[in-house]
Structures are given as C-alpha cells and as structure tokens.
Length: 236
Image 1 (cartoon, one colour):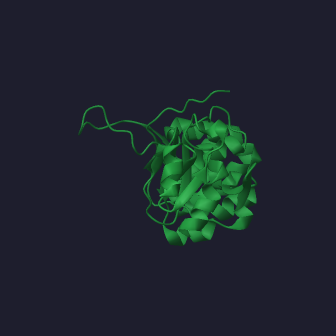
Image 2: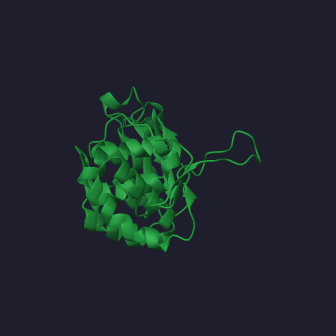
Image 3: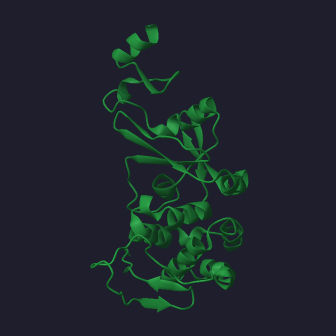
C-alpha cells in the first residue's frame, strides 16, 4: 500500500508488476526516467536477456536523424510492450536459438547512463537488426540511412560472422545497401552469402502492387539477387 501511495503521488513509477522506479523531480514531468537508466535492472528482475537495438542503438553509434521516443529491445521471448510516462517500450522477438548465437558480449556494446549500463547492439549487429526488422526502423529508407551513417564503422570480418546467423535475404539486402552507400569493404565481406541464395527477393518485401494481381516490372539486381521494387533515398 505504501508503494501505491508513492506512485499516486508521482514519486514512483511501476513499469512491471513488482518493479518500481524512483522518480527524481526532473523525471516527474515526463512520467519516468529515460529507459536506458533502468532497462538493465528491469530485465534482470524479469530474468530475460536482451539488447537495445534499432533506432536507439543507431543513435548511440552516431547515426543522424535517429531521435525516437520508442525504446526498442530485442528479446528471446514474446513480451508485450508498454508505455510509461512519455516513453514507449517495444520488445521485438528473436528466435531463442538465433538470439543466443548473436547476443554475445563481444558483439555488444555498453550504453552508459548516470545509473549504470545497458546492453546495446554493436554496430555490426545494429546494421543486421535494422535490415532484419526494417519495418521497425523507418522502412527500407530508414534502414538505408542507418547503413549510410554507420556502415564505415563496421568491421568486415565481424559483420560476416554475425551475418551467418541471419536470414540470407536480410544479408543480401544489407550487402546491396552497403554497396550503394560506397561502404565497399563491408559489402565485399557479405558477397559469399550470395552463392547460398536460391531465388531473388524484393528489396522492400512489404511493398504492395498498386493494383492487386497486375504484373509488376522492376529492375533486378543480379549481383545481390534482389528485385529493386522500392527506390532508396537517403540524406547525404
């Protein structure tokens, strides 16, 4: 009851049952502290491994235009997102076997706050996550902007090792975008994955034809075995 009284007085926030946040005076107008301050203790409380990724990870690594009120976290179990104050938490599911293979300490970075640290995807993992979950990263153009901004930071050998645990179609989309953005060393590291491609796939898999059933004529990118059904536009 005492905790509930404190919550009603806006001295505590309660993002999950049994887990409370102490609100500093500067937090009370927005309803909760920045999630980077409390995501690590929350996930330890829930006993779920995680990584901060997509837009917040891209911003951490220096991508431009990546301000977002959505705090995106990849987890190996189905979890519902929630809103707390002005913050929106989104939990993105990754198959537990794939998650375990890529969520390695040497492929993660540490996102620092005045309250401690949070696990954040390293730059190579961020790039692959943004392509795999592009619909949550601003679409193909949003993902392409992140590739343009961060591609030069990726270590080709690390990128190739992590890519082995992602869908071949996502790896080819990333390779194509890296090449388009002139990050040639990184693109070259992904070229061996082309040999494993069985069919050409669309660059933008969510793009629907203007008229259902009407054949669409799109450019084919033979090198990466892609159908270029969406134009790529980024800021330089």
